[in-house]
Length: 160
Image (cartoon, rainbow, N blue to C red):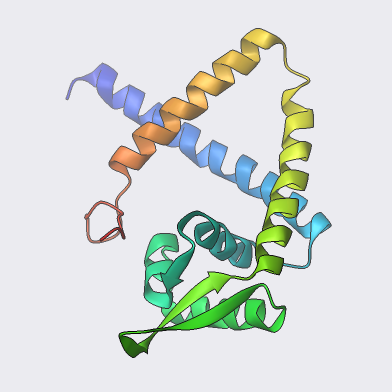
């Protein structure tokens, strides 16, 4: 690796360390002002919204969250009637989790509310900056999906 590449990589790392808190703080603030739900609970609802039915282990793997944390958060979501447990028909030891109709509606509403707050900020940009942001975020999403690894250096994937 040459010196220019090394400098570029260091700048990328610095940018990522700067971007992460900007996004996290902004989203967390929006979540806290619009619901009493935790960010982790919202993430669980988000993966269930995309995949529909998942086991506790799959949720934990997808979110890189320990199973006891997933269980505690799922229990709270069950108490609020936002998710439900389903026993697998072929193996009753396997417990799957699914959003309830109320959970789907609440997730949709919360996503729209937070999305609207983000939209209002983006709409202050001129059209060229909006296009730049669109291209940049799409490329960043693709690249990070390609390279992100967990602590065992295996690509992050919970798909079967």
